[in-house]
Length: 236
Image 1 (tube, helix red, strand yellow):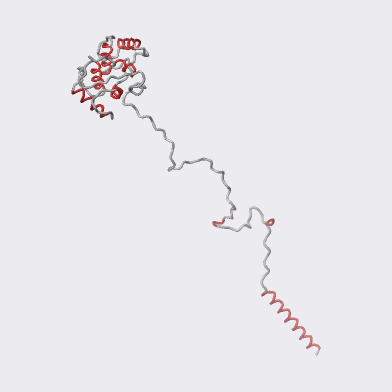
Image 2 (spheres, rainbow, N blue to C red; image 1 turned 30 degrees about the vertical axis):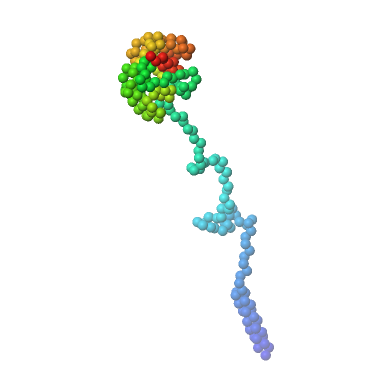
C-alpha cells in the first residue's frame, strides 16, 4: 500500500514537471533590449543600411552661397552705339555753314575756279567731271547723282551740305584731283603753284602762306577751314 502511494506521487510529480517544461518552450521569447549608442563600436554597425548598403549620410553639408551674378540671356545689356562714320576724312569738321566758315552757293550757269573745284572734287569721289570751270548740264547731273548717293537734297546745287560732303582733307604726299583743285584755288588767290595733282613741298609752302594771310593755323594742310577760305571767290 505504501509502495503504491509512493509510485502515484512519483508519477504525479513527473507529469507536473513535464507540463512546466512544455509551458516554457511554447512561451514567446522576451525581445532583447536594443543596444545603446555607447555599446556600438566605430565605425557604427548599428546604423540601418539603406540603398547600396550605405548608411543614412544625414543632412547634406551646405555649400557656400554663390555670390557671382550671371545675367539672364533675356536681360537687356548696356550697349554702346558707335558714331556714324563720315564718308570723307574732313579733319573733325564742324557742321557746314557754322562758325566762321562760309560756303558759296553754286548752280547751273556759274563759272570760275570754284566751279572747277567742284568738278575736280566730284572726280576725286569717282564721279568723273571735266574741270572746264563751267557749271553746265553735265556738272549739274553729276552733282545731282552724288547728292542722291549721299542722301542729300538732290537739287543739283552745290551748297553748304554738298560742299561738306565733297571736301577731302589733303596734305603733303597726297596726289589726285582734290590736290589739283586746291592748287588751282591757291593760284586764283595769288599763291601760284603748278596744278600737277601732287602735294609737294611747293604746295605746302603755298598753303602755309595762304593760311597765314587768312589767319588760319599755318599747318600746310588743306582741311575744312582752309577749303572754306579757298572756295570763297567772287564769281565773274
